[in-house]
Length: 130
Image (cartoon, rainbow, N blue to C red):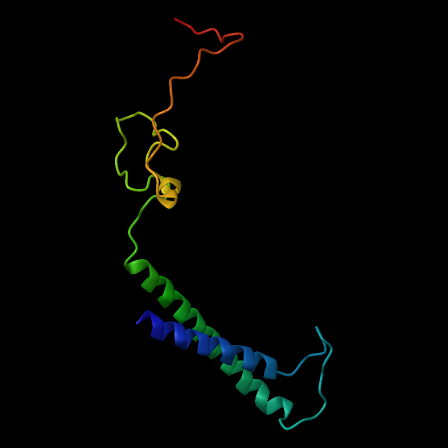
């Protein structure tokens, strides 16, 4: 289903580009205004304006349909925690690099050992109230 909508979407894109390029220039942008041609300016202006509006509406609809189809089978996952779904202890922060995250899965290795306890800080300490 999604492939069919993508093909229709791409055909709409090409048609929309073609219709926009066929429209008569008003002397702005590129400055390529034609005084005559195989189409008169009044008759085709209404047809091309309507065709542009219809193609733009269909483009919008297919864009929404593609986004809906893409989100149907998506399950919420976290790329940072990989296979780990619950934290080790309630309220405890998850250690960085210790949860078997995406980088460990891509490297094909096992999660590294838990880091050692942090060393005692050196320097002045912030006073704490008791």
